[in-house]
Length: 307
Image (tube, rainbow, N blue to C red; front, side, top):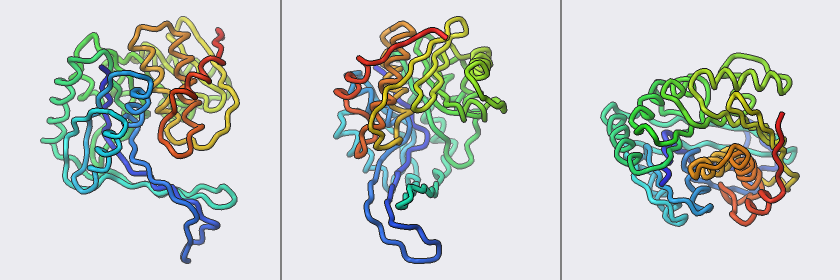
């Protein structure tokens, strides 16, 4: 079993407009609504790969039942900690010039009682798991140290996978983490460094390894990814695909890499699976995660090399 812990679910409302004019009425040409959250997206991907997976985390009473419908449709069981308020809603506007304008919300505050309840829930559920995924942002007013609080409830021997950045990531690393998945921008921001080549990228990865990570899976976007444990540095280039959406690409990478890691796969397979999951996710415009058939097709065409 793999447990996916979502601390900050959200509803993404993506709208295409002919043009976006501030202070004027704008007509929507197309609209898509996604019930999302990084760990929730990864849970869907894992389920499509055939993994036993369960979702937990904070959910909100006013509109959270919509997430239950989505997860039920995907066949992902869930046990959320329910909180007062509404799931945050993020709005993305794309005009005819492909210019993106984003308006991002933040989750309501979570009481100390609910924070404690989730830690107890994670302790209970993770005791039956091979791995846990903890990813995404935090609710309003929550300290980055809550990442460490949650991971401290996970029994030793259970693999920990974390996808976040900044102080949240550094907090998580204090507990020891089996796999982290920053992208280049997140790596730079977390360590306050500038990266212009692969040597500098590997230097940044080594800094995170020294803080408590076993593996760093560095996403390079459409260029693929690097996986390093400090001794071996592997690179896998992605393949060219029709890019229909970047939503959930990182979460697809986490799902597939976790699937391989939980089975005890070697580094080469963890990297190939991660790149296949991330690449497959960008081919699905109407879905938040990848289709298994596309994932397997891409996986067959990937090669890993030492760098």
